[in-house]
Image (tube, rainbow, N blue to C red; front, side, top):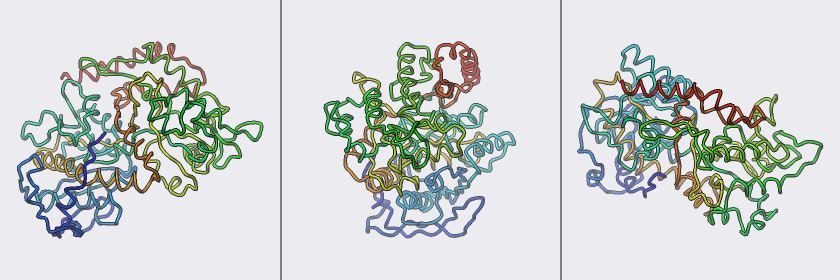
Length: 503
């Protein structure tokens, strides 16, 4: 979990009124300058300059162009928004950009591509054309990894011209670095520079009224679901039993519709088959001695998936969007709508779901839990991120003239992000505005405490990411036979990846 510090640096910068610097995007440019929000104190920000590990430098107004997508509201504003709008994360990012401009002469410009794939494609095209149009690219890690495999990004651990970026600092995501680093090479990173990495973390939402009315935890020796999680008793089997107990069928079959008469035990999607595996401390691959090892055939992996497959295949109490809603339009939009309408007890999904308009307008009381463990003996709860929405930053290899300023900017974005943006997101937005109880705040700490990244999922070697989901959709648990058919292609993709790194 990120280090969520108090906003000491907010007091540091809110006193300025800076001159304006441009921050624009491809579709909408503006000559107005972001200046630091002046709500604050008389404290001189320079007094605390030594907190930032780098010596203060002035880069003379250099413009660093950052290409992102607009896959989420936060990604659209978390680099360099053009105005204050009283939204905490937007305004913190605005103030951070103003601080970099005023104190270090670095002007961040945020530009937008059409999609995550478009960001990656533009990065590859820029490198192939030997251009330096954008100095930083930011998008989902699966798209970043796809571009990285084609020698698009600089190795952040081995930059010869400067040592500005220090990935050992706590404001960089240490778990991502641990899980994805091969041969000490790092091509993209995330952390407190962004908030979308936390937004993409998987958790379990639950309807508090359904849980309370049915006293669902009492059969397992606890007063509430929160107590089950605190006690370490929140497991997949317990969750499945509770889901079965609360299911209410009105007609001949359970109805997958935005407002069904039925009450589901859980609404989910096929990706949850992978998310539940990570929650059970199982992955597609793990890094061993600088080599991604396929773990799908391990006994514990096979056993865990059998439990998860059987649960998610139970159409009497669990609706899986792609299966239960097969043939319907907008099966993914229907999923949160069923939950928001009070017709499901559980819904696993990314934390960002709390900001979905459907959830913000929901007339239900809901809470959040970590994803359940496989068994009580499992030491910790474990959470994955969705590799499609978890964003990271990379520097293209064609960034030469502005490389030093870019590296300094990224380190400053991460440091001041820790001091400003993370706190605003985690405390003021996520905890205080989206959840109504202190128990959910405690659960969020559990969710973020043991977050992991699977290199197989991120680089999706020969589409290995779809291994569990494809089996679930097929309706037959062909775990071993599917692996036997595909293992050689998985291994070949891994070998090609390693060979490219060795070069």
